[in-house]
Image 1 (cartoon, rainbow, N blue to C red):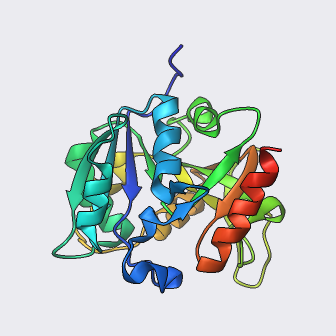
Image 2 (cartoon, rainbow, N blue to C red; image 1 turned 90 degrees about the vertical axis):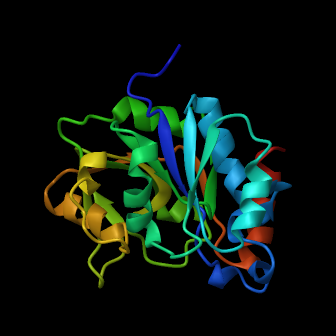
Image 3 (cartoon, rainbow, N blue to C red; image 1 turned 180 degrees about the vertical axis):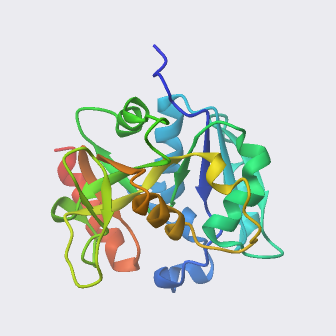
Length: 242
């Protein structure tokens, strides 16, 4: 049965330079680095396919030909390339360029350097079920910092009892980290005039307005930001299937 409010589209960020993953990324784009026998981006694209997301808009820049060739055989979700070869737009600018491809409804945003080991319930379904456009502009999947792999920073957000997210002060340690996936409203970008800008300030502005919410991830979040974290993530995957 289709999940109410499940977005039809996802914006998948695959245009970054992958500098922290060097030297692997000297020749291989970060989204194609394999973890557990599967390219990083395929872990998330498979999640979207399982959840019934119809299309994924994938932006490309660095080693773009490799990413396009890798994605060419994929049937679900439908892959649409947003070409940033001429100019890297950062995540915010990448969304603005891709808006005509994403459509007028709320859509997923997705990083390609992380994924999760699913718990008892699909986390994408959980996001869709919790999505309430009347009170939310952004809904992020957040993972407990203490139960995540590869988190080398002091968290991102606090969460109040209603699920609202509060940005961590620079001097604080917070209990939750952004797990790289969320649902956003296209209206947030409709009047944007910049062509290159970050996505995080959009989240922070929503938090200031009380319209940034979080859904707690069920399972184990794996952030694979450096070569050293590949082995750690694979150990965690191996333990999860025993």
